[in-house]
Length: 535
Image (cartoon, rainbow, N blue to C red; front, top):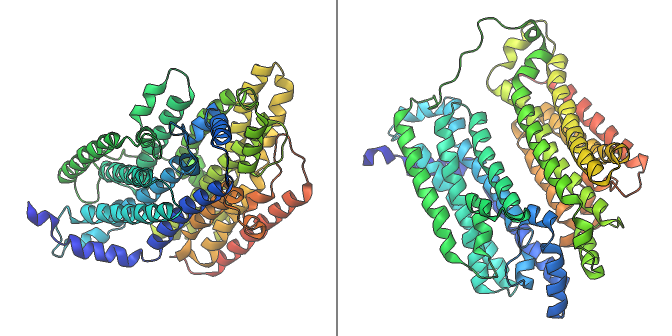
């Protein structure tokens, strides 16, 4: 049995060599997010009266909308707990996504692209690649947690709470490493592995949000790894015993992954792929039909997700104003969001629409990057060997990305508008208003698609840089005001130039400028693709 681990060290060194830029970027970005956010929050309350802090914090953290997004604040509420209020869950989600990407990259992706067969011809045990990938992911998590703990301790925050925070993140990273390890055995494709792992993360977030925000549904939080994080209550009760749950679950999942690895063939997944139909439909004879066939499953999943998110936002929007009636709490909320919209319900909806539009931009980037996946898998050349031109091939996938992102925001606005209209008795007024508000971030989403096309056309080896740009936009947009970032840095994000709708005013010039920037980026990237070699 020990021979099955042979070569783990060599594979781990190889993986570290390949990700020598990616890993420091992830660790540094997550650590900066946590430490800078905590420092900026603490700076909001110099010599603050504890009673005023407790009142302000309770007003924000007790609102169902914020409970759904960030979870409950530690009990009793303290400044240290409030300093990490937004980063415990949201930062944990970013950490989990990074773990999924690392484990998938060094397991299922390597196997799918045929490199494992070359490695297997040498002195490499069957379990070594999986073990090396998991060790690498857990090492990244450990280093991130250590740096975050050192930074928070340097700010003078409670040492016990800081230890609980670091172990909280470490436990989540351990669980998501094990989840991805299992997912890599179930499916034969990297895309399927990602879908399963991120699907588990999405369900986990939904269960936690419902358990924290919906009265009487608190038990759902105990079914979620993200819920376990909040049950620890860093800087509050610091319940370390809760960490035994994710550790136990991770051990079981690692054992399952190892067992599944022994039961499947190299290059295959435990779940057999279904054979396609004997005859293709006529619509598959076009590049657009092929692109739609490849991307329709992803769009369907995103549509269902946006439907559920829209229902959640619509159900919570009505409670915002009633629960935030204290002027000091309202002022704190505006300082945290960086918006001056007077109506708190509109402020909440505008913030949620902007935040979700960043996720929709992720869909647009993923749909555009399918071009690179097809090229890397050697599927592009056979298509271009037909009468299909490069422009038509590129344009078919871009059309799916652009129209798909538009559809998702439209679904979001329609669901929220319908729920608000039914709640207020003004469906004719709320529905078009909120559909327009949900579609307002669309030019910024298109800019992300355009930048991805630009990278794909000019420097295809760096297409993963599109995700780094999205993370940058997310950090400066969601935490820019809280972190006190300079205005010029916040304006790097296309989402910083959007109108705050509903409730704010609309200026056409920024929207036109964003649409023009997206057009230029798409045109330049398309020109680069038409001139460069394929492959």
